[in-house]
Image (cartoon, rainbow, N blue to C red; front, side, top):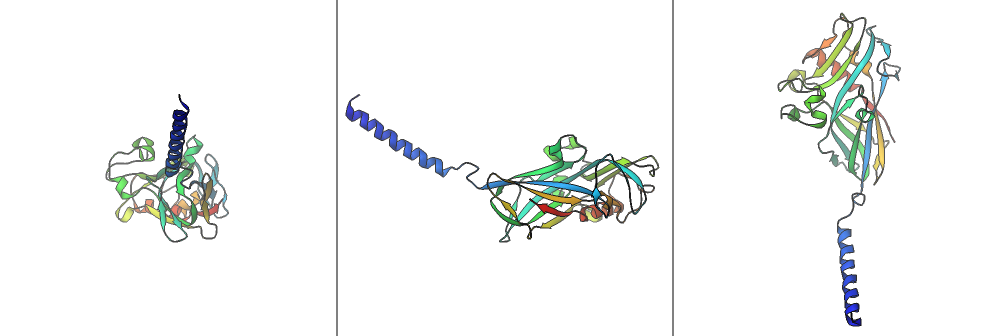
Length: 257
């Protein structure tokens, strides 16, 4: 190759490399897009003194006097949204999650929210339960799969929450409380807002922040009768709505870390 051709070839290669480098900058990696993550977890406590709560442990309810041992605690959390300081909202796409405390996989006990745009967030909105659209739109996959055992039928839809266990106060020695209903007087789906203005959620690239909500299973009997009278709920009812509402209303923000 002549000297002139060699110089021309090197110049062409240099131009190509420069153009390619510029094109790469136009298509940044996900990290360059400025996105982080949030781990949403629940901390469970028992009764007014908020003693630590866990499955397979015997408790005495302070109001009803019932002795009970929880073996199952499962519920849906959906439609997670974060509010920016300017008042605008970011919504997680396809936001349906099943929290399963009786499952063996630790990942089933919390929610990972990914690809959150960088910034400061002052509030979080979330729904306890599954919205009406997903209840009537046929079979789904993932958290909403019928194989999870959290669905009744097309008319009554998803079981928003299950609380099951053992109790000597129950006529059959057990309790199965399945709370559902997404329309009318027995709608148990509840949207909540956690105010984070005093502990802002700051999302930054490559970082995962942890948001902890407190939940109190004793609240199920905050204004309801004990297990000697209500120990099986397998359909919509006024009692189911009251118990689910009391539990949901007792959930509050503990920390942002």
